[in-house]
Image (tube, rainbow, N blue to C red; front, side, top):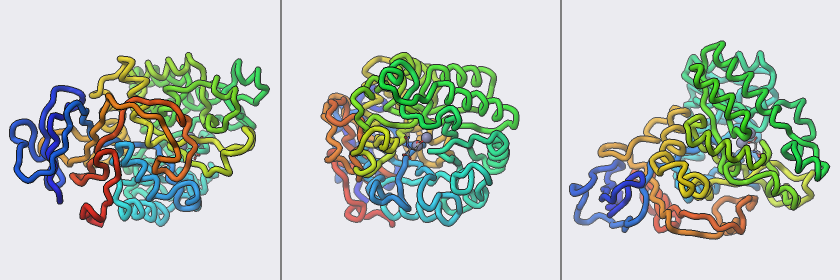
Length: 437
Ligand SMILES: NC(=O)N[C@@H](CC(=O)O)C(=O)O
Ligand SMILES: [Zn+2]
Ligand SMILES: [Zn+2]
């Protein structure tokens, strides 16, 4: 395996130092790192972070390979600086058995671009009725720890209670898509001033907040771990803040798009801006930024949700919900949180690597950049700027809400256990790099 010497890298945005990557680990730091024969990566001015970990990725395989495959989605992940992603369960067939999660886990391992941790469905077929074989998925080779019916809400409180109780046996977590179904029937966007003007059926904030409130109380009652996916309203931030102050074991996530975009964008009826939960108001954007800054929100999850053109190039009402995000996530976090002074790069390491790795119980990821640690690393150029062109991305879908926008930052290199998956901003074929497959 190639040995790499990163010269002058700013560790977590701090002072420049040299970093030696050898034999899969961070082998030396500082003056000790100089080693003859190493492949030198000039990292002057670049920020070195632990490899990013996404708790919320839709890879679409099996079933919707026209939107994404494990191969294309994990290429996108590596280019985005990720060394691990959690693959959501709303595939076809659903990831609700040990067999299907093992299949996805194997596809990820064989592709070799990043670690793929399949999420297990909470209920059979995401139907919200019968619990899926949670312990069989946990005990499978995929070692599932995160369970979610994402795309659907586990709305029956008895089913949610049972799931929370059940996952305690293997230190799992239930990740909830908080959407009260009756309050969101036919919903097309956020319910507010803009939906009233456009005459579109709205998804009110209370439809999210009612489920978040119920679930933190259920988690407290049964003493289990809850993760709130893609939290999007000021009220949800308040509820999670209250729950944490009370000692409830809840973690929360925000997406890059909810940190940057508002429902004003829906006025143009461009389905690229159609997503669940919907883009909210500027006040909500401000609240989720503050929540991420003060630690109420633990992590940024991309909710990378690729859709084929035929499901997006149509009128607003008929279009699918979802946006791509893996290749723009870090740039959006830089623009909204770092360049605004709300987070440091060390904080970014926490919310995009350490925290998601801890919530997902992922070993060997989200570790400090220290000698002897697995070399899962991301090297970012914060001074770079680029215009987002979806057709040039590795994801197989083009439904980026950031298309045409100029964003700061660029992932220069990504290392997965010491092997470069990205160098000079371009993918490095795992076969060429001698990956263990
Ligand atoms: N976010 C979305 O709008 N869509 C997601 C499902 C989900 O995350 O709820 C999808 O699978 O397309
Ligand atoms: Zn969801
Ligand atoms: Zn999702």
